Length: 321
Image 1: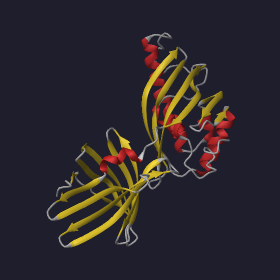
Image 2: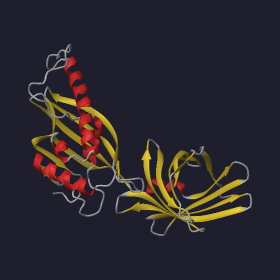
Image 3: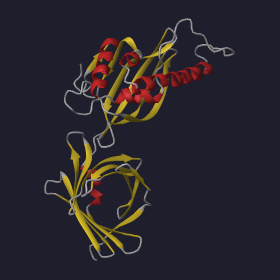
Image 4: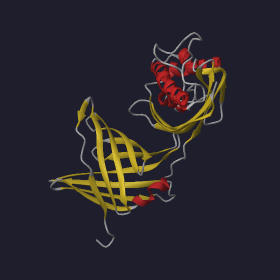
């Protein structure tokens, strides 16, 4: 059994594609041979445009049962989506072959898996023949609000057997690894003003080996001054850009960075000096080399929801100042 599926290493498993297929509507559960279309519906001739649309609709509607089985951690029902000799290949090249082995892998995963969610972005669904199709896309999987998100690309080969669409092969591959060089444009000094009388200053600088960026920040607000530091780098355990934050008041925090359509999304979690926890999503939108905006949304202080904050404009401080 693949170590990743079995969670034997403690690393988030390469279970991405299973979550992906669960949400894309690509696979259908088997139907009984004597099932017939609902009364009043006719089946379009195989290979016709109408049949293709029926296939797409059937795949989307039947996949709801896959999602239900996934959320219920029902390994038996999930394995039923594969052909008898179906395969699951992880991004590390490990192979799970056969419905029975896939069922066992699911069982091992669900025995240890925490809360999971998937953000699936299908990119293409195409038919290779009247009885086969390929789905391709990307997926991000998160295991609880404070754990790192993992991303991958997937390719699913589906075949029709006795009227049912089944998964014959599922292949996942690691998404392009982020690099700390992606944030090199931040190097320098930045400033922003929030409301009346609140000034925020931030500086970013390379550490000597350029494996990390060190940031120092200060906040002045009507006589109150706070400061702290951050270290930004690629977390080797998960392959994601990660921030470690330390405030002089004793608060600590962490965040994972993910690029999304030209901007960065930071899933952040922290502990305040008094022990309360804060979760939020921060969005950094790069306008150009000398300006970006920063916004905090989906904020939760302990169990209390906080309102979203409006975007704040941050500008580079000229070296001549």
